[in-house]
Amino acid sequence: MKIAEVDTENKVNDLLAVLDKDIEHIQQNIAYLNELRSFVIKRDDVALSKLLERIQSETNSYKDHQLKRRSIRKELASIFDCNFEQITLSKLEDNLPEEKKTQVTIKKTKLKALVKELKKEHISTALLLSECARFNNILLKSILGLGKSGTVTYNSNGATKRQTDTVFVNLRF
Image 1 (cartoon, rainbow, N blue to C red):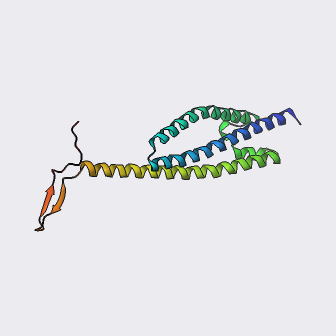
Image 2 (tube, helix red, strand yellow):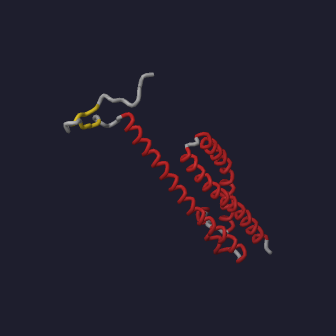
Image 3 (tube, rainbow, N blue to C red):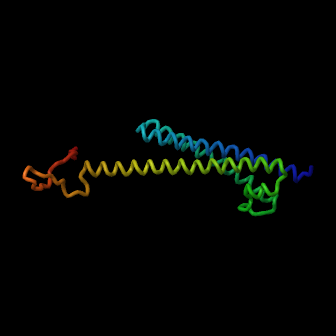
C-alpha cells in the first residue's frame, strides 16, 4: 500500500468516527425534542429548565466536534485535489475502494434517515409550541377582555345589553 492510500484510509476512518458521533448527536436531539414536548404538555417547568440547560451545555461541547469534522473535510479535499465545499459523502463514495465505499454509504443512508426524522420531530415541536402560544393568547384576551368592546347579553325581554363593567382580574397591586 502506498503512503497516500494509507493517509486517505486513515482520514476516511477519522471521518467515519466523526459521522458516528453525528449520528449519536442527531439521535440525542430527537430524544430531546420528544422530552421537550412531554415537559411542555405536562407543564413541568423544573424539568424543562433542566433539559434546556443540558441542551445548552452539550451544544457548546459539540462545537469542537464540528471543527474536527471541518478539519477532516479540508484534509480530504486536499487529498482528492478539490475544494472544501466539493468534498461530500457522495464524492467520497465515488473515489474510495469498495470496502470503504460501503461504510460511507451506510453512514450516509443512516444520516439521511435520521435527518428526515429530526425534521419531522422539529415540525411537531414547533406546531405544539405554536398552538400553546395561540391558546395562551386567546386565554389572555378572554380573561383581560383585550380587543373587545364588551360582552353582549340578553335580558328576559330579548333586549341586548352590553356588559363593560365586569372584570375578571384585579389589576391593583
